[in-house]
Length: 115
Image 1 (cartoon, rainbow, N blue to C red):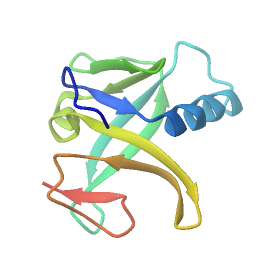
Image 2 (image 1 turned 180 degrees about the vertical axis):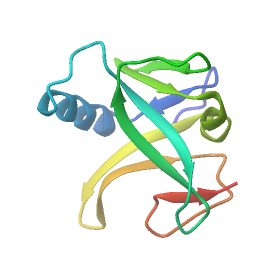
Image 3 (image 1 turned 180 degrees about the horizontal axis):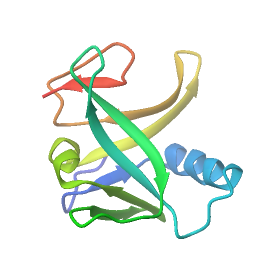
Image 4 (image 1 turned 60 degrees about the vertical axis):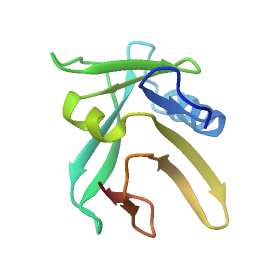
């Protein structure tokens, strides 16, 4: 990931392609966005969550990268500043993963982290 010019949440090219495909498969329209959040749980204490949504909440933070609209609540954003959403379809695991510069440790599965 390049050094961020401003604080945000970013998507890799592979993640963008997969999100576009998933949105098409789910038949969601352009009013929908990707909601990224952090929830308690997982083997490291905090877990990432992705959903399609079309309702903004009062404290939501909005971003756009590579044409993908990303939204997260303010509390989650404190954990996700300058995080990049990536996608892997390799032999070592398939799915979305988060490249989070704020995480002090991540679990082996890449789905949870600690700060």
